[in-house]
Length: 169
Image 1 (cartoon, rainbow, N blue to C red):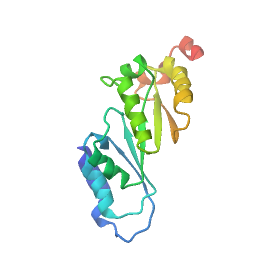
Image 2: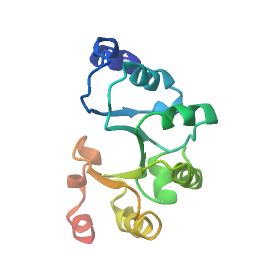
Image 3: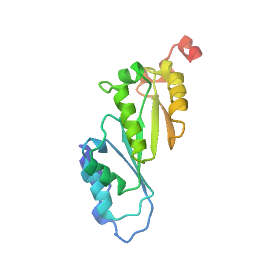
């Protein structure tokens, strides 16, 4: 299924009563890459939302028109950062760490609540403590830090680490 089809099928915005006051939390991946219509549908549905979480890889910072749309909703930006420097660039190729940090800072300076998501896998366990030091030094005031752990597929699982690797970790 295309992502848009999934959203349209499972979140039929036109069926909501515009007078509803239910608070919902809605997370959408990759909205910043140009899928404005999803946010426009949320706004058009006139549902009172507590939070719209946008999970992004942080490689794109929106233009002024799109920032205006984001500001019209209770948006929180959640940036996936799975390491710092080379570790990040290995995990998120072809993204560049300095560009993502610049965009992260731009979201903060634009007044958005910003959180960071770190996904731990067998590929980046050696960079976890460097990431945490970086986070504490620069971003401890972010609105959230999510730590995910990969257990599947098996080759990426932290359970696949050797006994020596587990002890060092």
